[in-house]
Image (cartoon, rainbow, N blue to C red; front, side):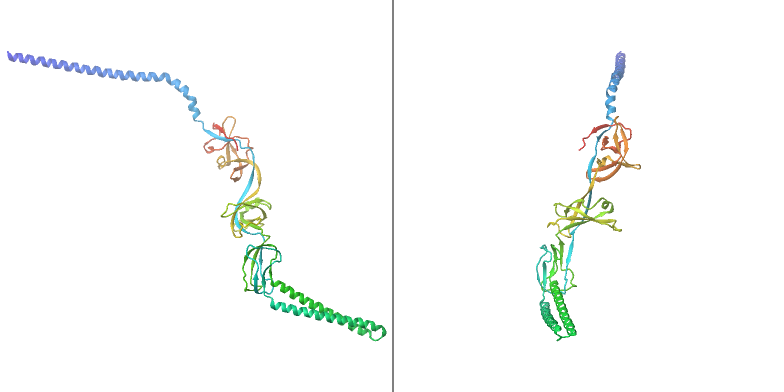
Length: 398
């Protein structure tokens, strides 16, 4: 009896446990289905909610999106300007007319030196004196010979005059008159010879002094008192005639073709910021076949800062030209040559071939291809294509 009751109770518990498990399984199944349906409904809702707004969004953003793809470029109408052609070069400062001064006479022992480098002297001024004690004695002897010859000539003339008075009375023959005339002429000739010898000696003595050939500035001195000098002593002084200086600058043959006498130049010596104005006074008529260069000589007025032998740079204004000026970034180049991009009335880029001239600090000169009224692309031209639409930003020309 008890056994049966126990078995019956166990069977009821098993049935209860099975029913409970079945109910839990069904509950989880319904929960899973509900979750799937909710996710599906959310997805459908999101898809259905975005579809009505898509046309509006596409219509509203189509114009800005296409506009953002059009590049913006800087353009300018450059006009035409008068641009100076500048030739630059470097060279050496020197005296425009350098005069080497040496011994012109016999020479001798230098007794005094009267000038120093940097002294201004006049034409014929004595720069140094040479001992002339022997030459002075020779000149005095010759002067005495002149006086003797003059006395002989006066005596011969007096005898001739007396003889002419006696010839009418027959005391002196005609032959005597002729002899006395010849004696007078010989005496006068000896006077002229003595005078010439004296003048020669005086001239030699005068040349013993070392003198300035022209007025100017003494640059160097290479003689001292007590030094023995002669015609073979070389240069004793160097002078700049009139103190005039010049810059001798080496330029290429292309640049030389642009220059002419009278071109204005600005010269700046090395080590200073001071600028000196001058002008080209000579352009070399020959070109060095090795370096393919020639010399342009720029005349400069005297200034203590201009020291011969120094180094200097020059800016020479070779002339001016009226042309379109563009920055270098505006000019492009390819196998077909140089070109720029201009913007037409439809804001489209168009290629325009140009011929370039000189390149200066102001930019590149355009000698042909533009008249200055076009809207020229200044930057970003390398990224454009012919016919491409752009947004131009006009820049005012300076």
